[in-house]
Length: 174
Image (cartoon, rainbow, N blue to C red; front, side):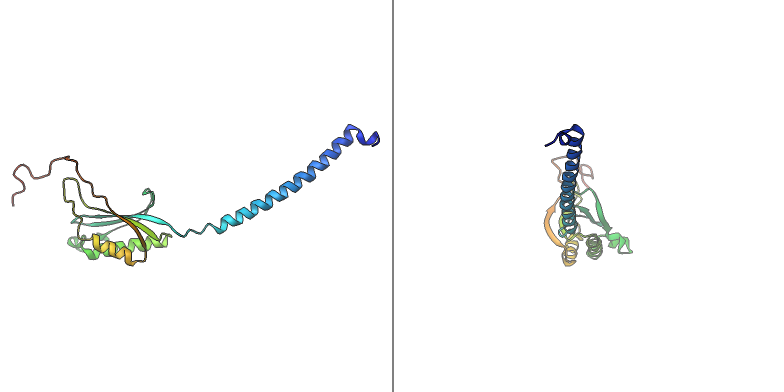
């Protein structure tokens, strides 16, 4: 090597050229890998199994069918028996519950949900622990709407000898 080739300016120039080439090669490889990963992620974006929770509240006055996401924090659909019949006395009927459940299931299906866990609830507490007449019809409608049914739980609140029942000491007199 001659003296001209070993001067600090020449050495700096050569190192800059080499580092530019290396960084260009590395960035090309990294961008290629990243674009491959991004295309893979875009392909996986389609959701196949989306599960929700159906809260069926059935009293003797009305039936509520409330579908939420799996965490229970976001409402997907909320239908009641009273939305599908005209007379007040028919709000808790099996027909109204069936129509409400079917409409709620269709709305959930349109949003991409295809599986549901069911939670049945009655009044509970110091009131009736048996659910109203609309529960069986609502469950049947959910199953017939081609939704996958996971667990079916009874989440009726039960008292641990809590408050006193309405009616007084001698009970309700008719």
